[in-house]
Length: 213
Image (cartoon, rainbow, N blue to C red; front, top):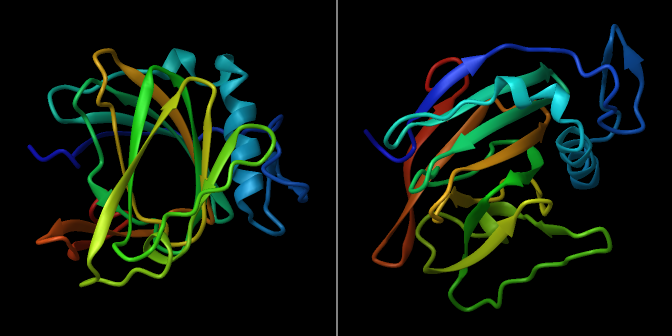
């Protein structure tokens, strides 16, 4: 079983009390007028602060299999709850045409990003504690580029926002289980998985929703 395998649970519920952005309300859901990293970060922070929305659904997988449940989905955005046992991780991947954010609600998660070996990684942490990153494959990286990894640790209460085509690996490298909430805008429909081979970013596979997860 690979480190990227997932134990999937999908039950969509409307978050009528949780606006994704200053958008329009339609049919018990909030739609997104202009998706932004700030909107995604605000959403995961808001949901994390209301455990009644997710804590009764929380589970954990087995071995390398993470557990996750989709909490809300429509064409504008989707929200996921993920349980991580020690040692579980995603592997390097992007999010297709989606931007997003995640927050840790229990434990610590480690994010690994890659940047061109000749470029100094750039990260901005604005007021409110949201770490923001993004850009194509971490700043214009293309497959075949020589890269170097950068690792950051996110503890409970911290938020990580990322732009379109951000490439990262998220893992629980600690000794205790971790829990996180993730939001993507628009709905996550595709992702590319990568590895670093001989220091170069290499494509492993291209996955699509409904087929590969």
